[in-house]
Amino acid sequence: MNYAYMRVSTVDKQEFTRQEFALKDYKIDQYFEEKISGTKKASTRPEFEKLIETVKEGDTIYFESMSRMARSMQDLIETTNFLANKKKVKVVFIKENIVVGGNGLDAMSQLVFNIMGAFAQFERDLISDRTKQALQAKKENGVVLGRKRTHNSTLRQQIVDYYNAGHIMQ
Image (spheres, rainbow, N blue to C red):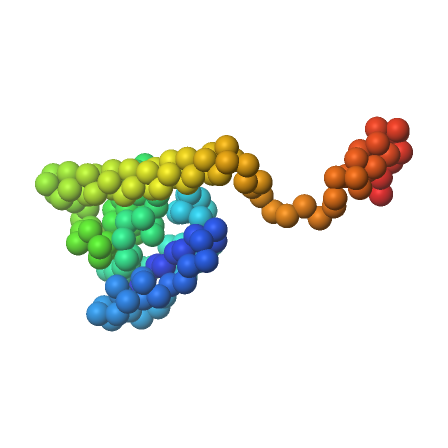
């Protein structure tokens, strides 16, 4: 059987369109889709857990890219090794053009896999750094971050005063 795992971050208002396009040339029997942050360890994501329970020896799992499976190098290596060596399934990363068979990786493939995984994590770290810098710049320019306040400052102060006066809020 051929399976595909697709993941988008819940923070981004993304859809699966780009990943579906990358997978269109493969005969996929079942898709597992998840809207969850990639910072969550792969094995703790509900749909990924279902995928792991579903696959059997000899099956193939397709990922649009390494970043769809995992965002940290350690998680990528551990999860791929678990799937390839313990579950005996083939893991295919389309974007990176890497196939990890049920027998694991030879020395050269392991090197390429580690380099590509490191680049995937590096890319994620760069995006995170740029986002933090952009938020800091907005703060310094007086932009108020976060959701809109539901109470005006007068009402907020009244609530604080009420609480500080020892009244219990219910």
